[in-house]
Length: 397
Image (cartoon, rainbow, N blue to C red):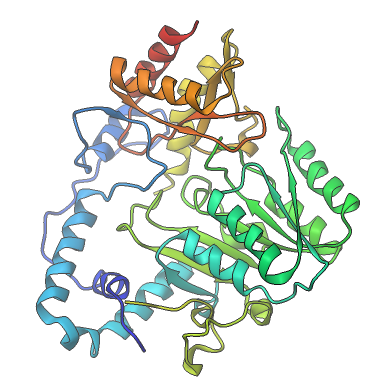
């Protein structure tokens, strides 16, 4: 088996190390208990230069995790192949089993990847049920790289790509109806892509209901859970999906470069093994990717609500993610009314940074136009949200 740096980092992470012990706060852990969460925030080395509200790219390791990671890197650098060929595999399996237990799945149903994109790419490219003339379905809020993978299926498999725009404003039933209508109009659809929590606007779609509706029509679903695992309180079983890609370095605070692919054991045969893998992993999700070289969700929702719901009815501003708690996590996007171009929203993000030292990011892709995304993390505070509210009000026309 070829050993990668990623495997070494994951495997070495389980080795006990000496380091600074985390002094965790005591208290209620209520989402609005600022004293408690200030103690959590103290576990992070945050930059004083800006208010960091663009945490969707990747997450920050808490200081105890960083200490452990640095110690693991030093050990791997010191022992090199002596560790890789003797201790890595048991450590890797131990970590995998712990993650599987947290997810509530069988260990052989998951494998580590570098990120959710790699996991989803393996699922989309390896899905072997498609035939020329079939169709696949994606939405405007799906991740760009995954849309590109679906577009590649048109060239490589001879399938048609159907693209829909999700409704704005969205409702729980309206989202289900949108996907159902697309399947009714396009009976040749065999596979759909579902972004559980959109990186563009923060919209959460009712995956379980859509998966069940699609399955009843003989349609499979691949679920992008890159942002939802850690922002929302769920386990894979709650989605009842067969194929899911996860990130652990966004909202779980793992070192950068750790994702997970999930394939339900009973559906493993629908995803082809990676051509670079050898037989030993044939009966597990590891054969489908090549291995080269506290409930904090409530806190994120609370931080999100402090600014998004405060501004929801402000004239001249559009909050893209619905107030319905079933349809959002911590991410939420906004735009100034009728300012839908990429340039408009880049300018808004620039003003927030230049004038208020608040770091956000523009996103494009929604059919309704571009927007600006705010993504809080555990180290953010209610005061950060107050600053964002005041900054947005100040730039309204």
